Amino acid sequence: MSGYSAGAKFVSYEEEGRRFAGQILDQCNAAADRLGVQAEAVHLENRKPAEAIVELSKTRGCDLVVMAAHGRRGLARLLLGSQATEVLSFSTVPVLIVR
Image (cartoon, rainbow, N blue to C red; front, side):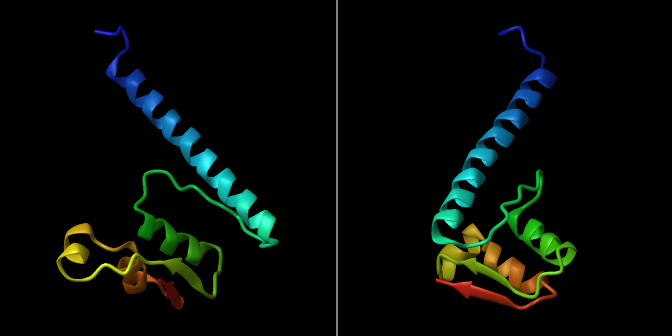
């Protein structure tokens, strides 16, 4: 064994996840800045993307959710699921899906 307890490995895993999410969100913020778009990138831990989007749209008082979709159809959509479909189903504000 490596000498780490299961708890230490889990903490390390979570920390690595936070670090990686921070890097991705920093890249998103930088891209928005380059385009002159005001944006706020947010990371909600331990949430499915659709749940986090719906929750944030409520708590932030959004009047529109805009999101991209892969445009999968048929069996691929059923097997892979669709965060866009979930957001459409549960959002209390309008959702614009861009392909």
